[in-house]
Length: 330
Ligand code: NAD
Image 1 (tube, rainbow, N blue to C red):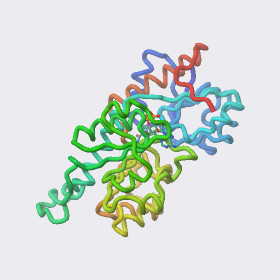
Image 2 (image 1 turned 90 degrees about the vertical axis):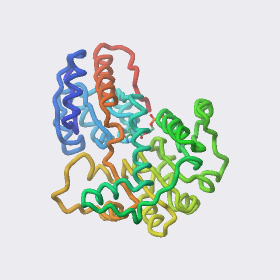
Image 3 (image 1 turned 90 degrees about the horizontal axis):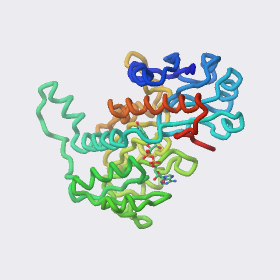
Image 4 (image 1 turned 135 degrees about the vertical axis):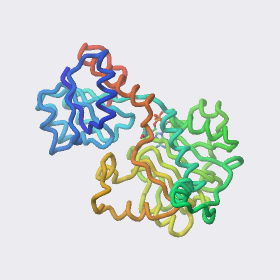
């Protein structure tokens, strides 16, 4: 099947080519993201393969359908960027990668937390300049602290397991609690408990209308003073401007982000030689207790390999008229 791959990075090409040996599709790679300006590139392709910041809203899906596309294959887990209702009404199928390596994201969340707590980013810069002063690098022990996991799904549970290994008490919040979280040694929080007792809050729920700005000014005001917040899920879960206020008034002790509300305009490209017009990001990165990575939590060999294999397997299932293992329905 002809597949138009949007937002294609070198690692996408390498791992999709490797996975395609078993599937035999025609892959056409486009560096640009899918949106209303670029959708014409997909004409004549039965499937498009897209990533987190590609746009598959009703307008784009309409044009895709008119150009002969009937499958949207997301090479990621989240699908907040696809209008599933519009896809269904156009008779288009949507597939995603339900699970690849929850370890990749959970481990990255832990890496960010350790870095922001122990000021590794600052120490790295200092020691490269032969500045071995320890002033301002004080952190706290994770052992014995309370960690809140918001979204106790696949990634949240791996994260919980790692933090339990540090000797933390792990409390959870989920719209659909699961005994698997409790079996690990976590327990679901009482109302108000996360704000009152969590030293660390980590976000692992999907971005939906219900979870948009789940961490807003009110939630931050209720948080334990000095708490660390890490978001490796989706930028829209956090009201970034409210987080900046909470950092400024010292309510938030540190912030670690792999995702950002306005990331579509910034992430996955080198803007180091340009003047970036995003004032919110400019303010964020100016804080010594903020660390940002550019949506790289998934980027391990194991995860990307599985993502590419699963995505192309889904295309093969679709082409062969088989049941779609990873279909998402409206
Ligand atoms: P999952 O479906 O296994 O878990 C999500 C959990 O969130 C579920 O337990 C679900 O019940 C819960 N949830 C749903 N609505 C909720 C609500 N309103 N309030 C509280 N909890 C709610 O998904 P997962 O594989 O663990 O992935 C979680 C998220 O991680 C994805 O949705 C995606 O946004 C993000 N992600 C990020 C990266 C990255 O590279 N940064 C990579 C993969 C996934």
